[in-house]
Every structure is written in C-alpha cells, then in structure tokens.
Length: 347
Image (tube, rainbow, N blue to C red):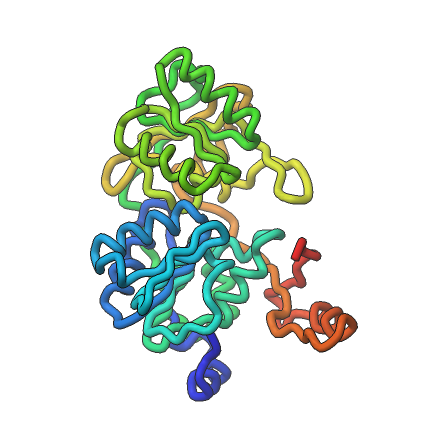
C-alpha cells in the first residue's frame, strides 16, 4: 500500500508517527486487541505470521462482521469477496495496493529472522493504515522500534497467566491437553503414532499439510476429540490453542541455513502457548530433549530475554528494467545502522 503524499511527508518528518507498538510475551491478548481495533474502523488489514493463524482470525472476523465483509489471502488460500471491508493475510501476502483505515502487523520480532525477516522489516517500516497502525510483538523489539520509529507510541502488556516449569516426563505420560513439539516431520509422526497406541488419538500439525487437513487437525484437538497435539514450532506463532502443557521433544531445528538450538525467545514463543487467558500453563521436556538449564527456565518463567540487536532488510524498491538494474537495486545498503542486508533468498 503506497502512502499518500501527505502521509509520506509526515512519515519523513517523524518516523513512526501514528504507529502504536503493542509489545509483550505470549498470552497478553495482542492479536485479540488488533481484531477489536480493526472492527472499529471502516476498513482494515491485518498481516499474520502463519497461515493457520490467518485462517483462525479470518473465521473470527467473519463471525463478527459477516462472511461477505472479510477476505483471506495467504500463499495457499484465497477467499475473495466482492467488496470486503477487512482483509486477513499472511505478512508475505499482504496486498500492496490497498488503502485502508487500519493496518496491523503481528509478531514483528520475526523481522530479525534470516529467512523471512526482510519482509517483516519492510511492513514495519513502510506499511501504514490511514488512521491507525498497530505493530504487535515481543518486548525484545522495543529498542529497535525506538530507534527506527522514534515517534511511535509503545504500549507494554503483561502476560495474563503464569507459566511454570514442570520438568521432564516420558512421551506416554504427558498430561491431557498437551502439545508435544518436534522439528522434523519424521519425529512428529513417530511421536503421534506412539501416543495413538497408548492413548487412542493425537492431532498432527505440520506446515507441509494441506490447508484443509491442517485446519481439520487443529479443530480435532480444539473440539476435544483428542487430548494430544504433536506439532512443529508453527504452533508458537500466536495460535490460540486450548493447551495446558507444552512438552519439547527436541530443542534443535534447521533454520534454513544450519541445525541449531533454539534461542531463549524462540523457546518462549512455543512454551507460551500453554495456558490461555487467566488459566496458568506449564512447559517441560520429553523424549530425547536435553534437560533445560536453570537460566533458561528462569528466563521462560519471568519473560526476560535479550533485546533484538539488528533487523534483516532488503530494498523493496526493486528496478526491473534490466537484470543489471535489478542486481544493483538488490545490492543497496540499508538506510539505517539498525538494519542489515538480508542473505540471498529463494525468490
């Protein structure tokens, strides 16, 4: 969405003018706040980090405003209406040409991610609603927002429930309403099969599943048809699941470049899915996951993490007049020292 000339001038004078950053740990009601704010405007768009979450938010808005009032755009699903007031999309799929009253971007800390970060950085810096813009994310983003968008208003929200460490348990001895997290499809399916043999049922959530299958698996868990969910870290991105306990079956994942251990804030995003609203949640380890050290447990329970140091950036004004011109435009250096040029991407 291009800014009007007046808006562009305002943005140049005071980066972040008209922007509110709502920051805090998981289960603080940030996404719920964005939905409520958007429904109070004549039009709006919300960009979300996950296809499953986009579908969940789309359903909520359709229930409130009517199915014809809202459209869904992700890399997999497109539900277009004739004249929608509201648009729900993944951050990558946010339509560029919409002029809307309200705009929100969720989980803005992903701007530091090597693979997807430059897209979130672009939305954070350049996408605005006419009347209101919300940036939602972890408190670790506060220094970055203060540096890049000094005129933005920052609101910090506390977690609504407590998160406690429950130690290590065998996979077959996990409590009901548990989400078990692993980082490969083989491991997810192996754990799900073990639970099915012991307890009769488990839902599976993987990014590689079709939208219909993935949505059906989440619904099966949410409806109480099964008491166990086995998933990748996709569940860490804001899904509102009825989970009481999160068990890590692994602490290492492939991030697109290397296999590495999750950092504390990544652990927190996933562990924080336990407990909803004012109901407390627990987290722990299982399977082959090494025991958590005391420092990590304290960080997860108290929501204390190192701030984001740098955001990934790629020039979004690319010159397609020739291959050489495109290469030059992609090689431009970031305009701010808080930004670093993103690695080459598949696109």
